[in-house]
Length: 194
Image (cartoon, rainbow, N blue to C red):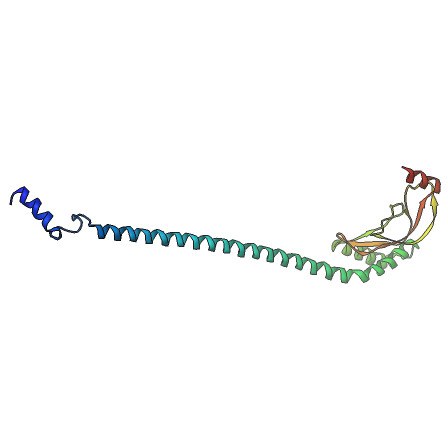
């Protein structure tokens, strides 16, 4: 067969060539395009599902972190409450030790026990507060009595500490019981005018 006859016979019998060499027909091109569109659709669906799962995972992770913070905070609060419950009654013992110390009755073995107890309580966070001359603060002081005026003070001031106050961190275990004085009337009137 000549070259022209081979060309004509190839056109006349398209199935006589291998698939890769055969030219695509309109049906095969449509099928390839349809398969490509299906793959693109599936990829778009998978991308959407991946984005949704990523958002879900981020939400679950944020919820877990919030839960962990809450548990840690609650655990610390339970610890503080237990410490508070144990140390609140001991403040009365500390008052007795303070009175004994003021009267010079704390000597020998009792002094060693009192010192050790104070070190232990300080170690667990119990802090004593309340001193003469402090400005009166109703959140940490309990005024038992107002005992007069004092020209040397500019506001209500703790004059006598009847019982020291105690706190653990920022939490007041017991307010300091105090006797207070106010500024002299003339000083008070001048301060109020300013």
